[in-house]
Structures are given as C-alpha cells and as structure tokens.
Image 1: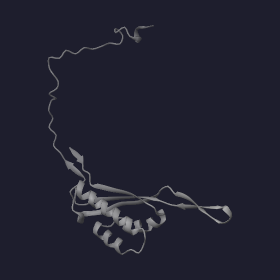
Image 2 (image 1 turned 90 degrees about the horizontal axis):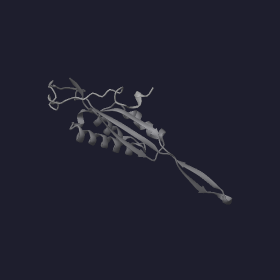
Image 3 (image 1 turned 90 degrees about the vertical axis):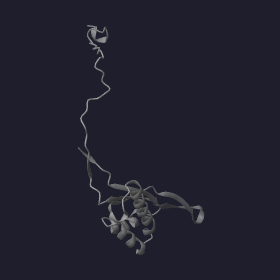
Image 4 (image 1 turned 60 degrees about the vertical axis):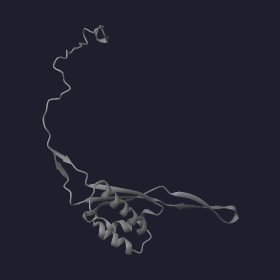
Amino acid sequence: MLKKRKTEVHALGHISMSAHKARRVIDQIRGRSYEETLMILEVMPYQASCPILKMVFYAGANASYTMGSNKTNLIISKAEVNEGTAVKKFKPRARGRSYPIKRPTCHISIVVKNISLDEYIETITWLKKPRWKNKDTNRIYHDMDSSGGVWDKK
C-alpha cells in the first residue's frame, strides 16, 4: 500500500508593504534552490528583500525541524504574495481639512519542497481479523414495522 509522505513545508507572514513591491522580489526567487535564494536576497537592493529573506529562513527552519531534512536539498516550490488590509489614517491639512492615508499590507506565503524525499512511502499492511468481535455475541435486529414506532401508523 502506498502512503503519501509530507515533502512540503510552508511559512506565512504579514508585512506592511504594498503587494506590488513584494512581488518584484518573489518573482526572482520562485523555483530556485534554498541556498541560491539566500544569496540572491542578501544582495538585492529592494526594501522587500529583508522580510522575504526572514520568511525563507523560517521556511527552511520549519523543513529541517518537521521533516529532518538537509537545507541543501530544499527548493522554493511555491511563493506568492496576496494583498492584505489597508490601514487607513487621516492626516490633518490646512483650513481644518483632513487627508486620508492608506498604508497597504500584504500576506506572503513561501512553500519549500524537499527534492531528496520520495513522495510516496510503501507500507505493508497485514490482513487480520478484528479481535473485538466476539463469536458468542447475540445480535438483535430491529424491524421498523414491528417496533410499534411511527411506521406502524396507516
């Protein structure tokens, strides 16, 4: 019997930055190896590279802890950025007016996959009779017609 093994681990994060700025960085690291991703993110000049670098570290730590895998065998299988809620503030302006300020946030999801593990595990199951069944048990069958319940009424 084949049993599916967990080969993917994910890390989720929320940062206060527009999703457009974070997508520029995420598009560069999608599909690359873990070590190559760390090198790329350290030298990128964008503001979004620092929080995304932390998220990749978290995903690698999750993979090494839960699956016991080596970090050299990891690849970034899925990386996506979704828009979050916008924090709305009002800034006072001249003559008693106010000006709305929207500070965008985004949700980052990074999935790391171990390429050295097989996806399926072969398990052996022995077909045994269940021990909880007793041979001397008397089974009582209830018929709805003779029980005097709702079904007897015509």
